[in-house]
Image (cartoon, rainbow, N blue to C red; front, top):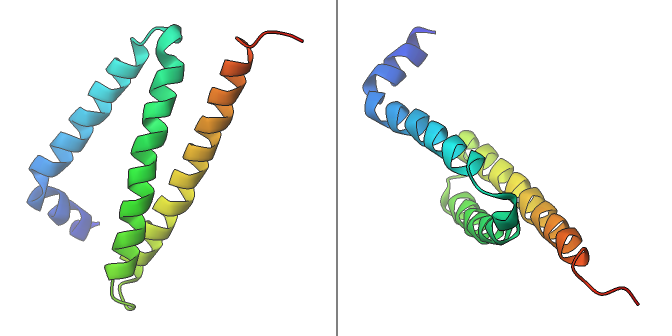
Amino acid sequence: MSQLLQWISAHQQMVFIVVLMIFVGIEVIGRVPSVLHTPLMSGANAIHGVVIIGAIIVMGQAASDNIPALVLGFLAVVLGTLNVVGGFVVTDRMLEMFRKKK
């Protein structure tokens, strides 16, 4: 526990920025009208594609004994892929609502 507190005190500015980004993200997303959610989903898919590529690069550059980097990279690839696929599924369903019936 003391190691965690030492790490937090050593990286206090970074922790503050991450917490601030969380609050700003919640406020920004919470105020988006529902009409804009489809374009935002497409943008989020593009961003998560970049996250997936970055995670693959981190995993490729990490040493074989650096287990935390490999585990976090693997989790980033899996969760980013799930988010991209889910985003495309939701976007496709929303676009189906606007297609003409045959």
